[in-house]
Structures are given as C-alpha cells and as structure tokens.
Image (tube, rainbow, N blue to C red; front, side, top):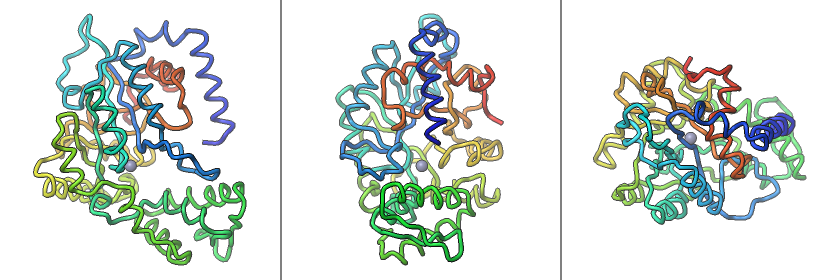
Length: 350
Ligand SMILES: [Zn+2]
C-alpha cells in the first residue's frame, strides 16, 4: 500500500475511533464475529529495509490484542466451534477466531505459548511443500537477496541493473520486482526467483528450513486441543492464476499430503494471498465441492449470518504490522470500516 493511501486510511480510522462512531455502529455492524489473519510473531528488531514486516507482529501486540478482544466482550473460539454456532441469539457473545497462515516456526515457539497462557484456540494453515522444506518463500527470498547485494538484475526488464546499496534503493528495487513477480504466471514466478537466487549466490532452500514447521513439529502441536491445522495448498500459488485443473490439484495434493503426514483430514482452508485477484468464485466453489467446512480469504470484513451460505468465501481482519495499535483493532472489530468500504454490503463473495 502506498504511504499516501495508508495515511488517508489511518486518518479515516482515527475519525471513526475518536468520534466514537464505531461504538455506536458496532451493535449493527459487528455481526456474529471476526476471524483475524496473522503470519509471523517475533520481537526481533527490524532492519531498516524490511518490506515484508507488515506480515509480522510482536508477541506484546499479540497478547495485548487477546486482552482487548476479551475485554470487548468477545469469546475466542476455534474454527470448529465457529461452524457449530447457531445464528446469533440474544445475549450470545460475538466470537473471535485467530488464524495464522503458512506455518511459521514462531507460531509454535512464540504464538502458541501465548494462546496456552490464555487457554484459547489457534488455527494454523499449512503449505504442504513448505512443511516438507521444499518450494519457494519467494517474497522473503527477494527481500534477502536485495538486502545482501549492492545491485540486482531486474528479471522483468532485460538488461536493467537496479542499484540496491541504500535503504531507499532497496525499497525501490523490491517494489519493481515484487509486483510483476506476484502477478506473473505462478510457475514462472518460482523459476524466476530461483534463478535470481542463483545469480546472487543465495541459498533459497534454507528459508523454509529456517522459518517453517516441519511435519514432526506440526504433529507435535497438533496434539494440543487448542490447535487446528488447516490447509493452504501444496505450493502457495494464487489459485485464480491457475487453470481449474491446476487449482484443483494444488488444493487436493496439499490436502492429501497433510492427511498422509498427520493422519487426519483437514477441514479448513486458507487461500494463498487470499485477495480478490488471487481467489474468486470459481475457487470458492472448488473448496465447497471438495467438502471444506470453511475457507478464508484476505478480503476484509467480519462474519454475518449471511455468510452461512458462503462458508468457503469468508472474510478476515488482518492484524498486520501497519495497524499495530489497539484503537485500530477496536474499529476493525466493529465491522464499520468494511461496511463503509463495501457500500454497506455484508457480503463480498463475487
Ligand atoms: Zn500464505
């Protein structure tokens, strides 16, 4: 998100917060509850150049968030409990579900410890190749390659060498490569990041080994009654950018591998990237037809009764690094900003 748009968006959230509008609207707009999106949890100090830092929250922020959610009168429940809930009757508390994408080791070492302290459930979505320590965490590899080098060839502009000495240059180069790479053919994306890594003597395979839980670690945490493991495909490709047959095999191969390794079938799913461009109605139908109980996107919103018929197109609220403040959290939980953004519609499933 550009810094100007972020500034405007934060200003709007501040107006909703300080005017108290979010509180007035909440009984109408907060719906049945909210599903939160998280990725990594770490208190490692950030490098000046950290373009993926929005995907990381600190343990303090996570714990404070749990406290705020409970203080606001929400019940923190599992995905299973969410699907079993009857339509919101009078007096029923709104719910919150915490979900983590990709299966980072810090989910076990840091996040789970906090969830155990409060005795509340956590869901983690697993990419079967990543947990086999294969595949490419391409966005993190790109960050590392740019961090470690003073110049990098632009794979999307023949002959162009991007200077990456200063922090500003590193950010510019990241933006120049990240977006074409994210939107490119998903197979080419992985070929391109691998050759960029090779050109710059960067060992891309150590990233999954360093950052992602392997099957033994997943088995270990899956013993906890607080943990739900969901599926996040085989290779973390954007489903919308694949043919129907490819999308189906990405999902089913991921599910089969999980079943083989963990001895049980996943019932919950998260779309890689999860945005409108990366997961659409064809994919919502695919997951429904495969019998998934729920599938979550990264479209922004809270959960209403109307979502009962769209359990494989659920919106979430991201707790990403740009909004690490409890006032934003309260405004998001009210559902109001999403209703305003969405022309007052409850559903965004097209
Ligand atoms: Zn993901």
